[in-house]
View 1: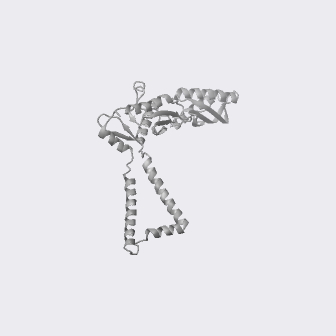
View 2: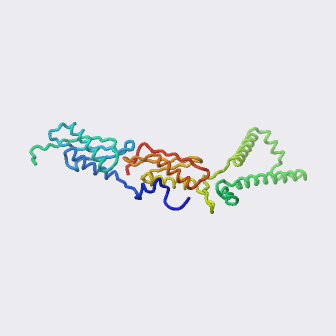
View 3: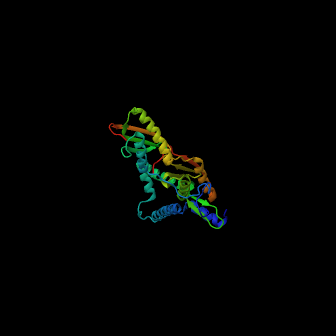
Length: 113
Length: 186
């Protein structure tokens, strides 16, 4: 074996040595903020767990949703789409599934902006 | 390729020496011969046997089928062991690498881990997410992708193939890449 760098397919294709790693905690913190925004509650109100589902991210969110008149199912469905889209955009990781478990409804009555 | 001394040296490193088996076998034969010779001499001189006369032993074996059966089984086992020692090639899990000036023999484990390392760098996964098993003629590289990021099998296979081809290993190895369905989160 000749000395030097290990075998590479194309030395120019991978010009930058090393690799990037996103920890599950980082995913969870990031998705927590995204989910809070999408569900109309604070950024720290949801609990998020990420796991692997066939090589893709499986996201499980548990937390409250904001009750501002929109039907909850609709809100959650659009939140699922938003969370998927934003997570892919922010991390680059493929998202396989997003499950949302709503545990509470936060009303914003009486509060004006 | 190398010739003469170098090739012989490489062969010696790749195959187990039979000298240990030969030493054991010859020792056993020597002991048997010494015993038979001593007892035969004692019988001829009409002296009492040192351990027990060979003919006495045969009579005892004839009298009890358990003894004769046991003796037969032990002898058969010794025969089988000798046969296995003689016939099997006694290869070490090692490979010869072509070089102009030196004789290089590499353990398969070392080769497998160097494939794993190169594949991990290429696939941008942790070293622990790649497992390479090296058979005699086939290498299988199993990659567990990082969750959310796909790994394609063709580049993985090519990295393995290239590494082995550049080393010019003998016996040659075909590489197969397997990408695991499920991934791991770092």
